[in-house]
Length: 257
Length: 261
Image (cartoon, rainbow over all chains, first blue to last red; front, side, top):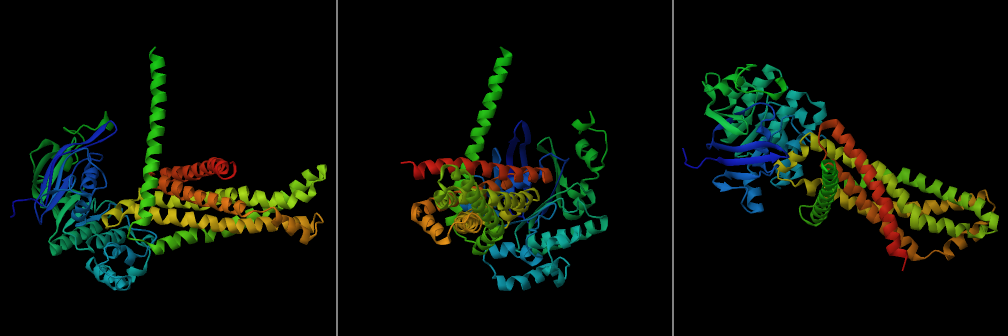
């Protein structure tokens, strides 16, 4: 295994108004592995990946991709480094003004790697990789079910064969079987492309299927890291309460007081 | 004493908020304009925005202009006949329409139609992460979403106003000749003898500024909207209200600059 992690985060801090969302996050994701980030709602999991993507500007800290700090690199270089990230959004975030095939090939067209004429065939090819047939290509996103929208979102994320993939709650809102199918597709795609991935999830079954390593985000920091297979057997009280969904334990939720 | 400090603090917060808002708007506007000139260009999107703002606003702008011209002729007739000044009607109609009413009414109509649509569309894209998705797919949202709309609106509004000018004058002409008994030849002559190129040009300059403002407020409010359906609704309302107020305020300022020497 190479010495530099694909993604290395140190001391990442982000404050929104009075609320300190990230309070010094440290995280390493080794090349070619899958990291699962778990944590309660509103603990900054999304802010973490949005910071890596450049959608949120952190207040402090270091985010290195391939050993280069994207927060301090020149704009152009930072954009190049981030261009290798593919993202699957929680609700798909498909462009609803476009057909499915335009959605799938959007990134490739933007990078001028294919022409509009080739795009439709290319889209059909990519859709096949996520188990959708050619007829879907001509539909609008609003005509698809939730599971199919997730698949199209996945197809769009893998279209440019990204070296890094982010998944934001990939199974949320799906039935358990469709959740398992999406997980399997994710694992397939990540393996085939040899990508490094970060997934955010609340779903422990999903976490164990798609993750090699896991990290628990608690009070703005990574409170525990370990192999994803140990999530349910961890002796860490915070992880134990979260993964088993216990109402009582070290995680006190303001709502319950 | 404490209450006084609290009051000053609250006042300060409002002022700071206003300054921050103005600053954000200015940065947004400058960055949107810069992206108009920066590749990649999106001719398809500019074309689509142009259709949306220009072509589909034709009926509403045409009707507004026609009726405004008609009512102007009728109103000035009833007023002016008291002083025996009926002959001034043609000039009143053509000058009011080209200098003022054409650009302002077209601007307000387009703000209600296209400005609201822009805010709703961009707002929905924001709250469903579509704008974030654009950035993750090697596309700058400012260049892709905002710049084409700014450009299209700035070009489309003057063209709409040319049409509004023609139909406004035509509305006045119809009422004057069919209802008020003017001869069509004399009406047209007095329409054009007092009209100067500057009257029309100044109206078109106003229109271009209003077009930019409509797209700017539509995009700005949509782009920063948050919080689901309610947020998108608020963004749409603010887009229309702020564009309308800015149109009226800028109209005064531009009239001052263009006509008062």
